[in-house]
Length: 80
Image: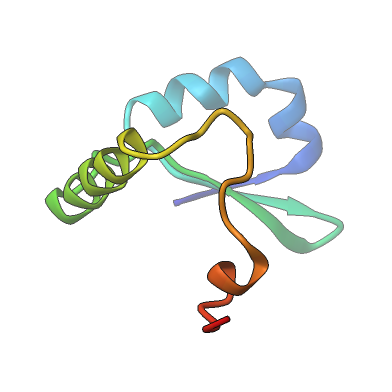
């Protein structure tokens, strides 16, 4: 992991992004303190993909137009 000052990361942002796209990681330092990490995007693992599919399947069967179809008690799993 390379360390880069925030001002340098700002000035050379396209160069930093190019290196990140090639797998490099950067720790951004501002005033002597670490403030950010710039990492390449990781491929989703199989558990993430399975959870996403399950969520989308649940949402497909629901009214997601913005109209509320649940009560406060249902939201907090209280019995009326």
